[in-house]
Length: 325
Image (cartoon, rainbow, N blue to C red; front, top):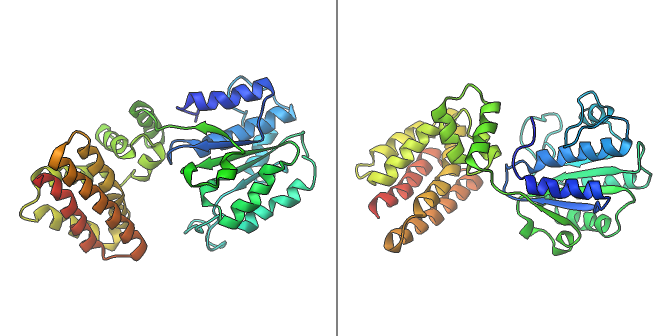
């Protein structure tokens, strides 16, 4: 699928490529789920294919599917390309939970690559998605490569929270700033990925995504529109009889409802933030306090494995504060 959105950031890298002014390290930074990783991988393909000079490339970022560069990268066999991501905790179960970090061992594994010249051209590309996930030791090891970059090596570093990176890493990179996408672009991406979704579901997903197609797709198939309606009811009525909270607790507390339960906890704080924007005075203070409480509860529920039914009921109570403002 063609890249969508954030044309200024993409054009900045394209201009550097055209002008022969290609810095060795690029920090692709912005909200999670707006296409930074997809762009980094597409840019890597284009950088490698252009340098190899074996394909007829049209203007833009696309590389023909029949290109040797595409075949080798997709097979994990391109000698001039490496991608560092969090690995599965259990190598025998690649579809299950990922490790918390990109390890220092993964970063150090690049040294063997850097000990030789690139194989197919004068260029190699390293993608790290996301550099925020590096262990501290891994970040320090990478810094050495950024300070003394191996000849011909381009680093494409994806970051969701660049402010948390080592200042010495940020200072050695050129920044490509990605922003949240307009609703129309998010809707377009959603329709291409989930053509079976109706217009109401697309609208609910766009709202829940808050400019992030990746975030919106994470809610797909969870009937987020129904959850959104329940949150609206809580926020507007205050749920004085506890009926809505009890219904949600029963609905989302079952083990089979775990994905919807997690979606509810993730969506609630941003829902409160949206409701708070037009408020002022005491109503705004109540909403901001509710937002902080929702953030804290959502984080605790994930980290401490709290009882699902009780957590949903409590989160419903936080949302209901808006109706009593």
